[in-house]
Length: 172
Image (cartoon, rainbow, N blue to C red; front, side):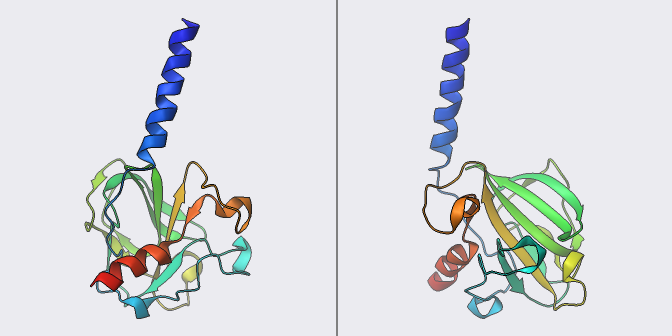
């Protein structure tokens, strides 16, 4: 019995490790956004409010602009956070979390499947974005850390969304 449990755990670790290598298609999460819609130096900027570092990118657009799912994945959560306001959390096939915050409206629900490019909601100013220009705060985090030496241990759990945006928008 112990051997079956051990083999099962090892199999799960291998599968999860392999899923981290699965390429995931990526769509710019704000309809019509360009390279001028966000600050290319904002990821991990410090100091950034009460959270210390800025763990994502703010993509500016008119209030009500559609927010698109950057990847296909399972919607894990829709609701309200004090800093994020109206938020959506999507987990993609590689087990990365895509966090969409400050939404004006949310058009999806928890435990539904979102296809890449599907409208999740609209750009807004909820949470700590109240009184600021409308934007989407978008971040990508992971269950398992990357092995890197820059930015300290906490940065290992975040991917740079600016890099992904620049890759996609440069191809257009």
